[in-house]
Image (cartoon, rainbow, N blue to C red; front, side, top):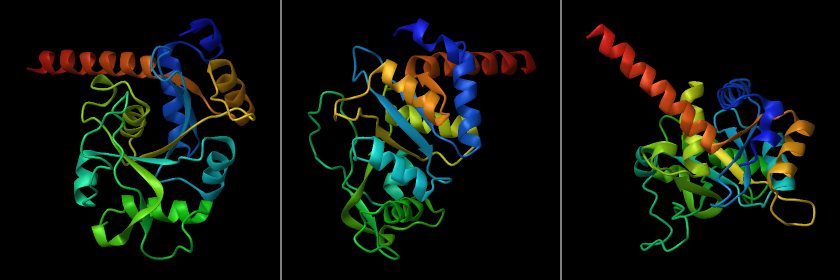
Length: 224
C-alpha cells in the first residue's frame, strides 16, 4: 500500500480513530484492502444509522451490489442459508441468500426499501419471517475473528462497528469510477476528500486491533 498517498489522513492509528469517530457521527468511511487482494475501496456505513440518502449515494457511486455485513450469530438468528454449499470464490466471500423486508417495502430495490430491509434484519427482535428470500440486499457472514481471521471488507466492517460501540452490523459497497471500472487508492482518496469520509486500510485496522488487544492483555496481567 502506498503510504505516502495516505499520509494526509495521518498515521495508521489516527486513520482508524478518525474512521471510528466518523461512524459514531453517522458518517461513512472508505476502507481499502491489500493491493495483492481485491485492491478495492469500499464505502462503509453503520447499519443502525444508515439513511436513504446514504444508500442512494452507494447505489449511485458504487457497484450496486449493496451488502449487509452480519455476525455468525445474526445469520443463525435469521436462519439465512449460505448462497452456495461449496464456496469456490477466490476470497471465499460469505454470501448468504439475498433478502427483502417482508413488510413496508414495494419492489425492494429503491434506496428507501433497501434501508427498510436492513433495519428489519438488524432489529434486536428480528426473526426469519421478517425477511423474504430472495431480495435486493446481499448479506455477508463475517469471520468471527474479524480482520485478524480474514482480511476482508466484511470483517473490517464488523470490527469498525464493534470498536465504535455500535451494533456489529454494517453496510458496504465497492466504489467505482464514472466509467464503471473499480476505484483504486488515488480515486478512493479523492472521493473521500470530496465527501468528507476518512480513508483507512484493512492493514491499519489489523495493526490497531493487535495494539489495542495487546495493551488490554498487559493491563489484565498487571491487575492479576
